[in-house]
Amino acid sequence: MKAVVSTLRSIRAAVLTTAATLSTRRIVAILAGIVILVAVALLVPLPTAMQLRDWATSVGPWFPLAFLGAHILVTVFPFPRTAFTLAAGLLFGPALGIAIAVSASAISAVLALLLIRAAGWQLSRLVSHPRIDKLDARLRQRGWPVILSTRLIPAVPFSVLNYAAGASAVRLVPYALATLVGLLPGTAAVVILGDALTGNVSPLLFVVSACTAALGLAGLVFEIRSHRREQRAAAGAADTAASNL
Image (cartoon, rainbow, N blue to C red; front, side):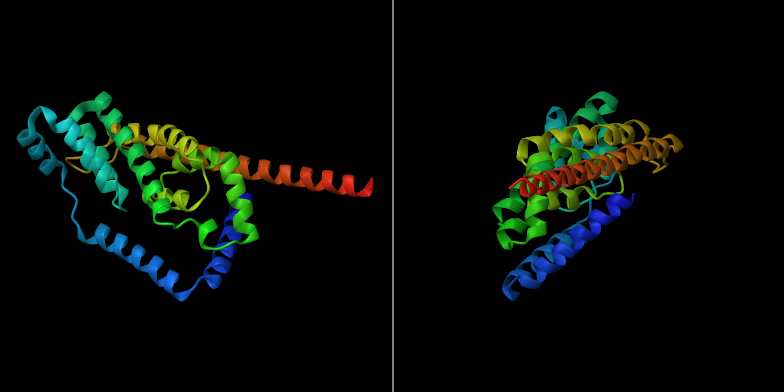
């Protein structure tokens, strides 16, 4: 846990330093984009499970594809995907519901990453800073363990992680695969154990969430410690080489 906190503090310091070097125009543009996304998420109502079931009746046999498309498009924005996950279990049953919910979430995560990069909102493009460069280099090399571990933690907002990954240098294919695997346990648990009609939550769902969160945190700690060991080994090798000159 100390390793995670220390790394988060380093990232926070780097972000603050980066913000201090940005022009006023860029800061205003970034803040305006964030405000628009948040406003859309807050003001646009999501359909209830009953409304989705009525929609399924009206659309007919094409409804699974329509639901998949709606899930993908809506969750590119910072909307909670839980409503769609619960509805998937209600409308399609466990097997098809899990397949649709996981596939839609993974595709949505990839689209969100591509949109952030298409907008030029990568930190490495906005400003050059040693800490940002080191973090980007690590994520480019081994970004998938971080993405996989973070996806396993239910408390981490889905959209926020998508946008943060888009702003980083994590590679697309490892990101997509890690997202797919990381979303599977929690999504399956919500589809199977969630109740979209009554809103009741099974105690077993809390147990599964706690287990996946613990696994995700352990993965993050392991990755951070591995990175630090590699840095110390590289520094030791550099000192040895310098002393032999």
